[in-house]
Image (tube, rainbow, N blue to C red; front, top):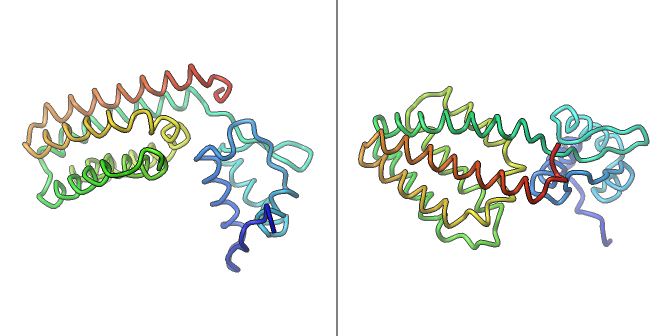
Length: 223
């Protein structure tokens, strides 16, 4: 039937609905301001209303949607303040992470960075989600190399919370990011900690400028 998605797994339908809606919010299928009606979602996802309600409650708790009184919800606008704070956190931690990665990385760490960066170059620009995923993989491979679990876990959480803003800017930034990643990789491979820190800081500040431009062009999506 048109408009009805494939039946979900028998186990944990609320989790299925949650993962589906969360992905569609993150990738922009449901843009900020979009109304989410429980009855319509129940029909489209081929589940009862109960797992839809549970999923929306969970998304509301995480800040992705805002609950309304008439059995529906609205996709929350993106918090400009939170995005700025996360980007500042990312810059501080990633520059330090790159610095220590250059001192502590193993041959296996370098091989992983090279593999990810080489694959990144082959992805079609229209494959935005894959591009964004690969970009994140590269950054996390750098974050892993210092062998500091706090660096890694904090940055992993920050990247997850930045998904709603990182996806829209990915395509326009793709070629620049790949070049910048290559320079960071070479500094880490050479063991040049100061250059690695500087290049990562420059990269993250460049990302910040891209985000500011996106905000300026799409002010209605932010709060």
